[in-house]
Amino acid sequence: MMYAPVEFSEADYPRAEYQRRQQFWDPIRVALFTLAIVAVIGIAIGIVTHFVVEDDKSFYYLGSFKITNIKYKENYGMKSSREFIERSHQIERMMSRIFQHSSGGDRFIKSHVIKMSPDEHGVKILMVLMFRYPSTDSAERIKKKIERILYQSLKTKQLPLTINKPSFTLTSIDGKKMMNLLNSRCGIRMTSSNMPLPASSSTERIVQGREISLEGEWPWQVSLQLIGGGHQCGASLISNTWLLTAAHCFCKNKDPSQWIATFGTTITPPAVQRRLGKIILHENYHRGTNENDIALAQLTTRVEFSNIVQRVCLPDSSIKLPPKTSVFVTGFGSLVDDGPTQNKLRQARVETISTDVCNRKDVYDGLITSGMLCAGYMEGKVDACKGDSGGPLVYGNHDIWYLVGIVSWGQSCALPKKPGVYTRVTRYREWIASKTGI
Image (cartoon, rainbow, N blue to C red; front, side, top):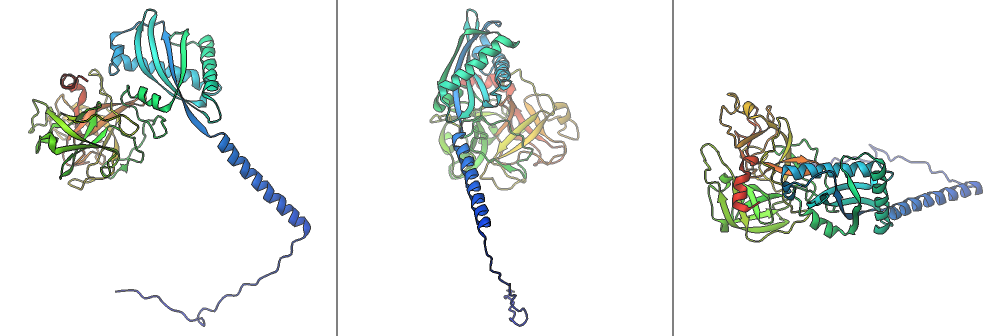
């Protein structure tokens, strides 16, 4: 049944007449009005000029210096080692303390240790430092400000590490060089403006969850697709050529020539696309028990790291996450059990759950082995789902992200007392290294 518009006659609703009054302006009012207009225009010009002149831009510097009160350890040469991670965090915290407590503290953005090398007097450090200053400033003038702040701190502050002042050098670098240096580090998220992306605080979920709003928010996320069959699984980029995923993703088809990998926050269109050249399943993968549910896939052509495509860090095998640690799972999977794949990447914040709790009779009744990790909430509601398999569960530490889990299995999606079960990546570090050298 269609609804026709109702017509009313003018007699029913007589037209309202509004009285018009002629307004006369005297000279004083005209003068005041003109002054007001001029003032408004002046303020507007001032605001525009302020933002044009004071428009901030990013400045990047490569810092090199020696620390003399520590000795070099062999593991400092391995960026995924616990020793490198802990020492680099200490150095980065010290830099934050130096600059954030200075007069121009709001200008300092972040620092990242790129390399530690042996020196006869201790350890030589190479690091990137990022600042925001008005675009009218010159890189050379800013460099002098930074050096002044640093030298003043070395004189007056009690710092945990002793920097040899004569060894300190600072070199201005452009955004491209900065990104190339950061690409030697894993697990770093950058915005399109080459600024670090802070740890996300979202509490949304994949099941009824939030779409990823920023390109590069989770730049290691991969969509694994069968040619002609669409998205099948997620995966994580761990180097220029290697992906880490779940073994069960290849149960139906192990032929690498039938698969493609895409990168970016949407499946269609992808930001980057590659073919697979090799698939390696764990030799002891057991489909019935989901044990050793881990696989590697090698790309036929390497990818170039950028803000959109980046590798995630593999954790040191000694890393242990206590229960209730915040971790993030991402994927293109369905929002409800057996629902359709999502074209846009989604994320969920979940919490780790101890194996003892997960193995309770009313949860998974002893099915969780040492190679598995539970994460989610005991009340349900937040979870990975079908199509998220093989994707990353990551843990952020000082804005560096580590792959701690691979989406593996679970009973349905987001049910109470049935959290997601993930392959525990720390358990397979030696296996990954044996196949890839990473």
